Image 1 (cartoon, rainbow, N blue to C red):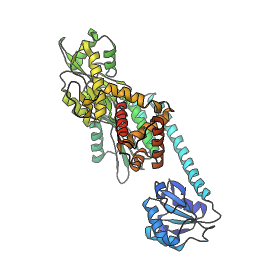
Image 2: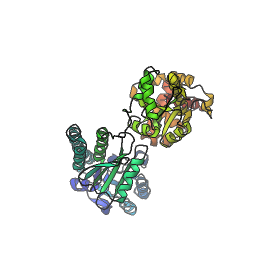
Image 3: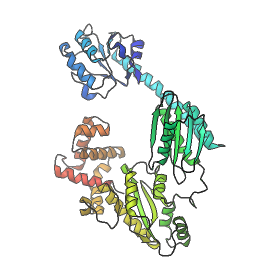
Length: 491
């Protein structure tokens, strides 16, 4: 964003009100002659007008409306309607503390917009180059000698401060620069290390700002990356920290007390190969301390709530279930557990960490395929009703009365016309319909969650009605489509 003072200095604009607020940031330049433009504003705009529809005697009401819409400043163009800025508008802006600039006839509204866009583009290109150069340097460091320490040193240099990677479980630490860790920062690092889900913390003191982010590492998990710098971190700094955390997760040395074999991918291997394999059975028995040929197993199929971040959270799931047999299939994670682990404890832990899961009944090794199918079906029900499900237990609510497989088949047929559109269009329309139905057809709430204008929501709903040949004003139609959408959220 660009400070309002830059417009004043570069374009030579007289200030008629709000002289003490010229440091306000301008995100956008918007031109409107509407008597009430507030519904088309998002905040932090420089609102330009020539007073075509302005009635000076109503200036107080006008300024109050745009101030409530979080407009940063008003620019009033003199001529052709007014020869000077109306005094009523000046007085209203002074009362509300809203900066008011005079736009002389020699200065076009377009020049205001060009100034903003040029500065934003220049700043963005500079940040992109900085990010690209830093990413290239970090990747090079991660593939060279002493990769972990060198990566932290480079990260500290690019941030203009220090970087620290902490392993809470063993304990051990690696640093770049000179970390300044006070009690508050240490508590934050310990809290992030102890979290069972992706976590980040930001804190400020007099002379530094510290960001702490969880890092996925060898089991058992318990890692955090902390970065401190004397300036407030921007978007580029956060992107660098996220990238560095991903690189470091690949570089953390595996401790001697790790699982007896590498932990990721064995569940899929167990399901794909002959479950009678003596090698696989011996390996599983060693890991879990299970002995005897009568051992029984549960399969867990889980998905992170919202269907996002599953790959990044695979290590978290393995740590939470204390199982090295974890793999990923699309957005679904699969885990294998011995019968001795109480399923109620599994559902409690997963639910608190933001996962939805289906858990099979206990089966012998020869029936793992059946256990997997049970877990998949239970996950479908879990995704529909929004809570973890254990196969074979009674399911409450509407999910108990529905055949999930048949409902999914119906949903595929019902939404086929939308899926036949361009892929991005289909995704946007389905997301809009889901959110609009969840908000009971409330246009403004749906638009706010989607981050679009309410007219965009109306247009998309019109497209949906046309494609599906239905009228969403009908309550039964809305209920039918809502159930079908819930079915599409399953595995």
